[in-house]
Image 1 (cartoon, helix red, strand yellow):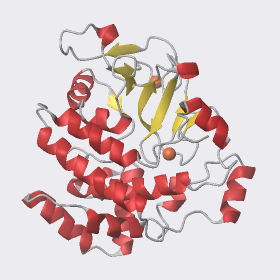
Image 2 (cartoon, helix red, strand yellow):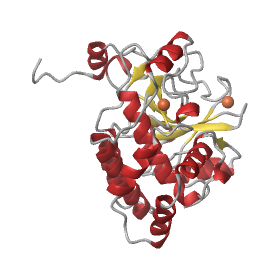
Image 3 (cartoon, protein in one colour):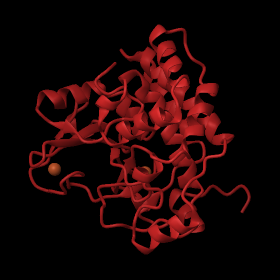
Image 4 (cartoon, helix red, strand yellow):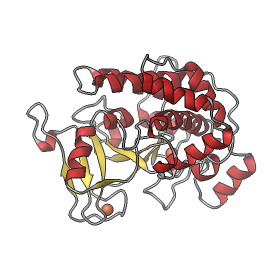
Length: 309
Ligand code: FE
Ligand code: FE
């Protein structure tokens, strides 16, 4: 069907992807970079958002021309399928060597700005051996942030994201099944970075959770905590911007008094261009507000130095 533009639902139907999932496009990192550059205009953290945009450009180049990134073996995929487990589960793959070439490729492609902190971080990364790099990766993905220097986190995170998106997009048909652990990514088992409330077609009004690692999105009902699954007393907090009322804010945090966790939601109805990772990074002021109220984030943004700037 040359020239025909397919709606997201039709693409999935055509590719036999289960309807509870949205797979990212092959240009996901380029789109993220473009969104970051747009969000950087007039933003107090413009320099930082531009730097992350450069990192996303490098991620796209690695995804477009990937080095050898050995992923799960066919037997491992068959086992995951048999036991309804995520096919590219991060716990095992981050401890294997498969993703390390993505870090080398990323360090080669990244156009580093002349910034002493970035130069020092890149120097430390380039000099680290595979065991050290894996230990940092494990620390980042398992939430043990004291295991890695904060300045290295965005680069380790970016390399892992490329490898996992590469594996996600290469999965054989039928690898992804709806699992019971709906608060974690059905592909890689990571927690979501944010939620996307869609505004078009048959997905209008549905919420999808966006994976912090592989960028897969999966359906998750609204008005339910994405950590403890409690549906009562959820609060929706937003920052006042451009005189918009709370119910028109394009990004709001769903905060749960039961487990004290929160997750930001992008409402595409109010900003159709929103991108899960980019809009999360551009709304760190909302995180500060939630921290003041005593709420905790349960998944990091892997492109942000934990506790750093
Ligand atoms: Fe994932
Ligand atoms: Fe909760």
